[in-house]
Length: 159
Image (cartoon, rainbow, N blue to C red; front, side, top):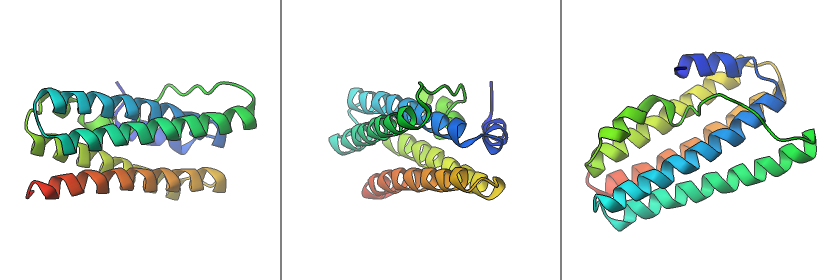
């Protein structure tokens, strides 16, 4: 299985087309990830606020994927293919499977988003193609927004 460094290394060599395809797949997987977290939080009775936050992050990720897919089809005239796991989900999947306390869940989700922010910022500094650099900086901003939403929930717990 690929780790974060493997994904970063591969993305550092990606063309604009490959980077957009990756982003689409990443947003789809992230949407499913947050949908599952919302379901898990609801089943564990962790509170409606966190369920709503996870559901909102899922919807936002799906909307990003739809917008990017439309752009991709217009620009490249085909369906995207990536095959790389999303940086947002990869590093903390196991923690989510074990987490049953709201603080644990939020800390793991926040960690995941920060790893992604740092990775995308690093990638932006590694690539020479300006379009790809801008794409990675936008990805970092999106994931930073997710981190901030999770952080607000965590701070609301007194964390």
